[in-house]
Image (cartoon, rainbow, N blue to C red; front, side, top):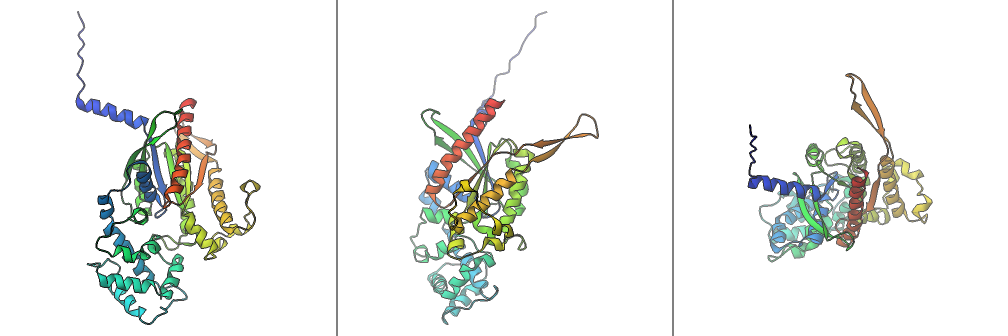
Length: 387
């Protein structure tokens, strides 16, 4: 009896699935992780600037409502906390009270109209030295990092024909509540080939959003973990009893130990170095007040610390904390062949690459990402040849 073989003609859906699978395998996938307000979304914006076409006029105009909302949130939070911080602060000029009352009476939600009267009151309040003093003490309450940038640009933003510039886009804050992805290609050297395709995922960093992180772990080849270095003297929005930087270190420890991304390259951005430097050098904030172990920390000789630059010492201390966590062996428990008997395994420490970054500085991120690209490609190549 003859055997008959019947071949099914591939459908267009099958062909599309194969194409997507090939693209998925060939693409380098990066997951941005970190606590809320660490700068993850700003990195996504920088990739759009550096590797796509930046922002169109439509993109810029679409951010105007968010920028104005950032202004109101900023000035309201500063004014609301003037008499809440200890010791409280009073306005220096008597007529400032009129503007303070006007803004506070609007409440925390943005006004129905951003008119000339509103912007004049914001500008008058922001120019008061007492309000500026309260701003300088923003580690004692919750305030977005873009407050100073936008409050200094009131005259430009209030104009009817205002279009945000690139810095405005980078400073504009919108809370990330879902998983977003950006696709881009990076040119390679003539020895490596034409280009490498990257997918970068951004997920919300607030505590309530972290349960969704596992949805983005599949196929990830590198994790970019962002830590806001300037948060060493601040409390979490979600939990006013918890230090932000301590929370970030604890979260990094959890990610370092998780089995879901054990094979992924691990890169840390100690971000907001400009704000950290200002706090240390201009505002004379003491790291040891929040991290007592800092008092006895002395950088190693290879760090080439000059013994006097306190900002350099602070950022090296934070890198030391990260590397100490990464050097800890990870113990895992695997299910054995015999029911009731599990196998305990101790994994060797993994490599972690630490960079000092300013996410709003395009040149800084360009230089750092060139290094990150090489780390990721080297990591992937090493994985292939170790198989």
